Length: 496
Image (cartoon, rainbow, N blue to C red):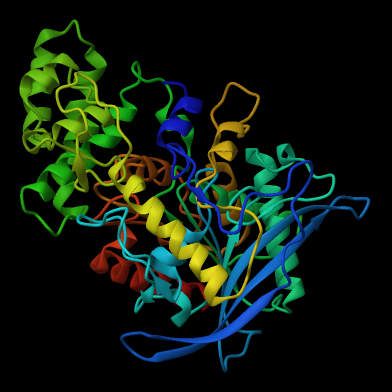
């Protein structure tokens, strides 16, 4: 599979279908839709384990202009600022989702913002009521929050003579989002605040590049990066099926899913140490021997079957090289269920269980798309009075299809930007986080990338954490709480 195909089939939240429901109707034909409404704000509170936080929530537009001064885009951001705090010294975090093509609603209402929607777990369905509840683990307890919707997602769009092509590319995206952060900081008089960036999936790929742009071009230092389920280097997944690396990196996630299915509810890297050692040792060595070495194949088949719970004949047919889709389907085959690629133990009924090849929407995305879209529209329209005569793009398939991944032969990567950002600022800290049962972005890919970083004076400045759960592990209560604690500790360390 080429890296561009891998991006489309594996990188998050925009690969399956568009999820945009009409709020007040479609945009007018023959031109740009009507102007966005004026900025709005409101006061609210959220109950956490330690306190009741009073804050102000805002929906704001950050316009972008070309060198001639003509507006080319209107970016909508959703902000949360704690009351009675010194804005000059309080941290501010800019958060981005992935896709490319996903709006910020996933992180905003999934785990970081003061209100959340339960979704993405066993038992959640598309018809669940889209009622937001207090998020006791909101990051607002230690940082103000700004959720950014790039062009084509949420309500953000091009304007005037702007073309989407300038925004829908690896480089253009990083340059644009860096500029948005810098403009917003200046407009809100927050240039003295410690700046942090958070990103999920492709958002995690974005943030090292955005940080480097901010450091170099826009003159803004960044104190910390939090990457949630990222792909940091697409080169690692190149070369399938010749390269063993894709199979090496996903095997511990397969084993985690099997063990959790069998009753282990405390999956951690420590409990997967045996699988990591096998994957990077004997497993890789036998893969390198190739399918003509029958003894190597039989060793692979036996061990992989034991670790994954997949029938030996099924493993043998794939030569020990289990694909994500076949694993997600076969793990729960006995119950006529299919697992999610985003969390292998979140299941739905297989619509065609007797078919040789599975063809289905993903249980998590299919289950979350409707309630999350409805919750977002209701939040903006009813709670905030932010009424837009266009669709809310939760997952913009046209953005994902049109994305420009680059013109060279090498796959895109963010490790160069991360390395340069860490080298240039000894105070910068990075936390890379993953869910153990995520098949889309296996945590071992990030481990492999981070292990190649120099120490830069303190190797703990770039850390990896793995939690129970999948791609959106923060939808699980215990994992969301653990993430919040680890992120708070990073902010405290970065502020010293």
